Amino acid sequence: MTVTTPVFEWQLKYLREHGYTVVPLGDVVKFVKGQGHLPPRAVAITADDGHRTVFTVMRPLVERERIPVTLFIYPSAISNASYAMTWEQLEALKATGLFSIQSHSYWHPNFHTEKKRLAADAYRKLVETQLTRARQVLERKLGSSAEMLAWPFGIYDDELIDVAAKAGYVAAFTIDRRNVSANDNVMALPRYLMTDHDKGRAFAMILSGGDTEAAAARMRRSYQK
Image 1 (cartoon, one colour):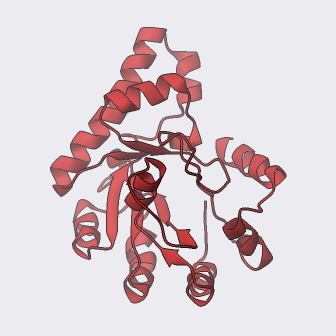
Image 2 (cartoon, rainbow, N blue to C red; image 1 turned 45 degrees about the horizontal axis):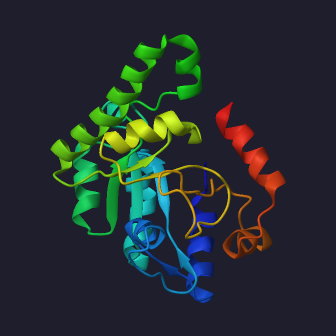
């Protein structure tokens, strides 16, 4: 959700000192599909939305640690919103070879709200446009494949998964707060929504898969308000 620089630095140090390997998110997808293996204590790092601090603050730490990171971007904000990166900054991140830039829909709609507001056909069209246009713009602007999706607000269901698969996505990610397993649906892979509370024992519990369902429910309610 929001992690301050000192906490993120502490988390990276903890991973390094405790034998964790930060792997590309695509390797996790291959593992779930039965197409590859992960090292012991594998961790993947993602950041959503495209905030400018990814370029100004996160990038130097990622380059120092030489770790892969996946960014989930909604293109409508890029070079438009005051908080967001520019296309030139995303190009620079891509050029490091450490950042993979993937889709977070086109303008980050709340699909729960839109489904209530729109007729069924109009809603389906909105979803198709959001998922397809995001891929098209990212691939045209950056010249690389955008085949992974982070569900906006962590909202997903069977209909959304069907549209995403037809739009060409090979994997999609939720904010269901638990570790990935080989039996997970590749179009609804869980992630942890990190905050400044996720350090010390709390961070160790996440890495071990011991985070509680109560914490997961609390986080989902906070993010989906």
